[in-house]
Amino acid sequence: MQPSLFSSVHLTVSQLTFHIRKQLENDPTLQDVWVEGEISNLSRPASGHIYFTLKDKNASLKCMMWKPDAARLRFALQDGMAIEAHGRITVYEPQGTYQLAVNIIQPKGEGALYQEFLRLKAMLESDGLFDIDRKRPIPELPRVIGIITSGTGAALRDMLNTLRRRLPLAKVILAPSPVQGADAPLALVQALQSLNSQSLIPNYLMPDVILLARGGGSIEDLWAFNDERVVRAVADSNAPVICGVGHETDFTLCDFAADLRAPTPTAAAELASQTTVDDLQELLTSYLSRLSFSTLNLVAEQKAFVSTLRSRLKYVSPERRVQSEYQHLDELSRRASSALTHRIQLQSNHVNGISKRLLSLNPEGILSRGYAIITRKEDGKVVSKIAQAHGKMKVRVSDGEFEVRSE
Image (tube, rainbow, N blue to C red):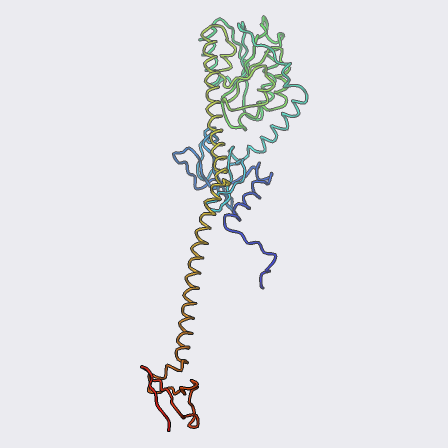
């Protein structure tokens, strides 16, 4: 089948690659996508960026993650790990390949939980549980501090040590509860209700503040603190609640419903015992440290962004086009010079051929072979017949002429 002479589009490799890149990068679906697969060919060079391949049984996808995003990973990546990666599809033009520019990575299975997290958050937020107006101030000098956490976990030990060091006069009441598993939500609700009920314990002093805490873990480990019953119990608490669940980067729905969120259980204990100037200085230092960390991350992100813009600008820079046109002009000049030289050569050969043909047809050329040309002197006409030979005549040979007379 012959290709059409009119409908086909002729592009260079760069033009076609740039067209493909624009098509992929202008597709909203491909610029905000979660991809599930298994890690292979993991590479982490000195630059801090991460390169790997995400694959399943039928296909593979090249992936890369910039250093600022890689620094926020909560777990170590390794070949064979099943993950869910979020990012956008880009094209690496020098190699003509498409890839996923990843900004979030989470273990496989967290995606569905995260969607459920967003659904519950939207529902509870619409009910007003997260309103700023509901937040109550934390007392600066609490007399009674209630703690809800596992009775055997490291989080409890850390909080008790902190409270003993910072506010040894405070009375601590523990309402132990499982903080993980199917039984945890109901147990956490009961613990909150018990700390808020004077009738359950004789001579019980109501807590001035309640610490709801546990150590870090995956989203599945922390899911009890996203349970709707627990979140509503936190919002209904008579005493203000400080929620210190997980690590600094972990967020649960209880964080939004609580009166104050702490990044860790230890920090929750510190926020419940704001008593001395030293404590306030430490808190200020912590805020400055977090601000510096955020600023450095922001600067790194902006540097990466500027670098990306610079690369894009360089690609569409007029200077690049001018250089390309210079090269094209040089190529046209070379081709023109070559074509002119070739044309001159052809014409020279043609002239030489015509000259040789004319030389071979020149009547005078036969004189060198012993022939002569006889003309009448009186009128200069060539004598080609006997009848024309009379009177004085000139005989022309190869090296001159002489006269003869016919009698």
